[in-house]
Length: 249
Length: 59
Image 1 (cartoon, each protein chain N blue to C red):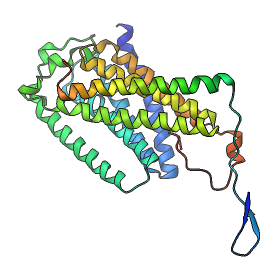
Image 2: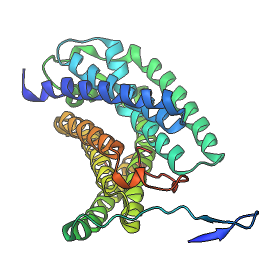
Image 3: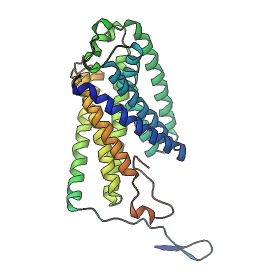
Image 4: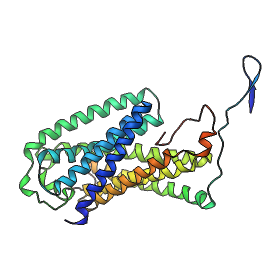
């Protein structure tokens, strides 16, 4: 087994720990951004596990999980968590309704394409990201689901990376919490690495996807933990702290 | 840093302490890094929009 095929095992292990920590934080604080991040990270972990599984053998429903979560939904759901953190307005709920509706439509389209998968083209020990386009039919032959993925990925990229960069800039400009500046830079870099690798995959260069995912999982997890680390000035800070904008708030 | 409340006594306004920047390197590198990451984000977004609009060929 090549090194590239082992990478998803590490990614899914990191994402499992990451997801549990984020969901525990949601249960403690009941903040919606933790819920959406947790759901998105769980999707990321499931897609990574599906990649690892598909490196060994074929299963149509594992492929279903890989494409639906990995290619389509993950970025949008994690990004929605960032939107909840940065904008505590009612219109965010409208965006959530659109996201949920879009996710349901995408799931239905994915179910629709399942009988049309050409599994004779599947080769074990080859990354699924390099062969999925021969397994799935083209858009004009019924794989309409392939048209939906850019919507989620563009939305997720702009909200997650944009939110992290904006948070980093605010903390840097105010000269406070340097750990959160660096944490947000790590999160933005991690999210960009998976966005970059996903775009390359869509352009036909899928061999870098697993590495991009591992870098994303490691950097985003490191950023989250760094932001969570208490700073001396936080304990001495005001009883009504300034609005949190870090991805770990 | 303080102002009278409704009872007339002064209450110290909450203060959020600023921390000094960790180093000059931090002050110099962070903005450059943010600009580079923002530029890459814009490029990747444009490519993704190009794929969505069918302007960029994909497999």
